[in-house]
Amino acid sequence: MRNLRFAVFGTGFWANYQIAAWQELEGVELVALYNRTRSKAEAMGQKFGIERVYDNADDLLANEELDFIDIITDVDTHAVLVEKAAAKGIHVICQKPMAADFPTAQRMVAACQRAGVKFFIHENFRWQAPIRRLKEVLDSGVIGEAFKARLTFCTAFPVFDNQPFLAELDQLILTDLGSHLLDIGRFLFGEAQSLYCQTARINPAIKGEDVASVFLKMRNGVQCYVEISFASILEKEAFPQTLILVEGSEGSLHLTTDFILNITTRSGTRPVECKPKMYDWLNPDYAVVHSSIVDCNRDLLNGLRGGKSETTGEDNFETVRLVHACYESAGRNAVITL
Ligand code: 89V
Image (tube, rainbow, N blue to C red; front, side, top):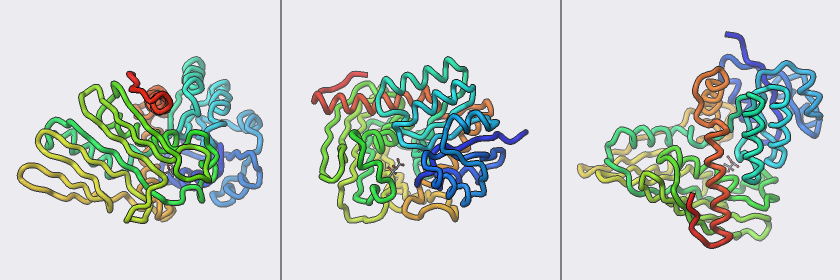
């Protein structure tokens, strides 16, 4: 099977890990880089041995022979790059969140459908090793019928140091983290029927909200509470894992810190360690997050080769729908029926 040739658009903090994660996989070849600041593309090119770098997206698309592009730019440039690639008949992977608003996401999905190109969203959180393990155990039926869940990602880790653009977003926590956590809710329990959300801004130095609490009623009956925060000063001062508690008719699953999944039934609790695979390139603060990029990329590559991929644009559109329903709910202080 020949290698799939691709280009990366955006050479900021996240691209360091996404490119390294691609290099863990067979069957792909990174041939060119784009960044609107040429010197940044050149620096990344030197780091990974990529000679062809561009500061003009159209020139890259005109000059290079590509099977797909991987967009790792800020959210406000996603739509224009997706549409440019679709117009050239090139398949697209785009970093989450798909778009800053719902109509733009609709336009992106439609543009790829019209052009007949494959469109995927790079949504890596559902690929985290402990979350995959929790899903397996949940599906095994050991805790019976799930009826209630809590998904938590609350931290005071200085995310703005590595990703300064986050401080500039008018809508922050629900687009950045909500996209991930709401997607995990869909991954575990399917689609939501209704939701209610409240938001707050605690850090006065940023533009958007940094705290959100969402209560979802899932179509399968599960009551799912999602709490996300970049303002939580908690006793465990490390980059947090996503913590999950699922309660079922016969027991519970509790994913706690340090990658321990406690499986509890009436006969007791069995702790299972589910550590992520460590790579020498990952940033230890983000270990479980960065490690999941490899598994996410593997799934996307499968989709590009004509197999099934979990996070297609169409699928992720349902996550985008939830994110924007949360903003609507918080804005109107109302329950939104989906
Ligand atoms: O993965 C992400 O979306 C990052 C972080 C983990 C900091 O939220 O922005």
